[in-house]
Length: 359
Image 1 (cartoon, helix red, strand yellow):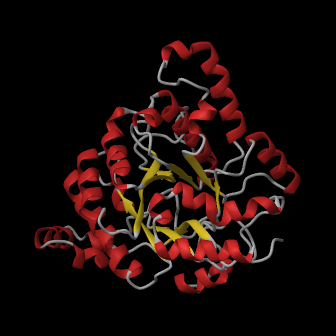
Image 2 (image 1 turned 30 degrees about the vertical axis):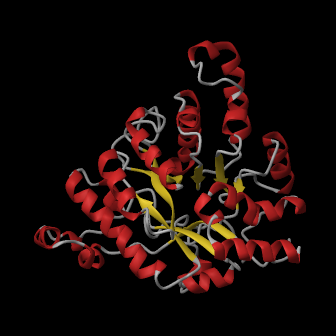
């Protein structure tokens, strides 16, 4: 395996989910009363996509490993952290907005203040663009937040104009849009209905990302927001070659329908779309090399551990088969292109320059 590097930027690092009771200090008096009177602290509020004891959710190798120790274990210099809290699935828009704000404030006070290696995600609900924009505006002054986080399976597909105010706010403040596997469980994860098992749901997540990418291209999101960067988290990437090929092929025949696509979709998305390395879905080194050959570049891959999810064994998240010359990009440089706020962070820049000198 490749040797350790002085700096690694982990694009997908999960924080332990806060209990609803932990959020009370971050709510105003009214919502503290509402949460208490409705006995919400007794409810788990966990997303069904990640049941607490499922094998994919928890890696037994990480048992007893807290956040600082996990950063040390993988040699992580910067980790972009997220807390996929189930309050995002609440139907009451006022309660949902209040609790999402509390989640974001809890992350800042409990984790970002305590661990300088962490950067944060502004967690928002795509179902309420106005509340999401207000939350982005509220937290945009805290430069430790480097991305806005949404789930992959929403009620409306992500290219739709419904979400454009969120994307406009991201672009305005130099925040990357991150879309993570998971859903609200109001619509089936499959176009043919509800599955029965988590196995089915988890496999179907990659299909959702294919749809999201096609929607972003077809609806003109990249043209409307020319400075917006999009990161797919826990999406896999082996599906990418055929999706790119099919978008390019179909565009040739129907491009008069989407005149804003003034060049091949693969060229439009270049430098705008990035994907986390884990889960590395090619089954072996040879298959990984073939996948990268068909993608044509490693410039869109971001190093990730997906801690504490179970995507690899041992202490090395980098899968076998990655070309040595691609590692500086995957470990650091690609993330600096994907995250404008990281690229502007003096501490990150200094560490990246030190890495270049040592390599």
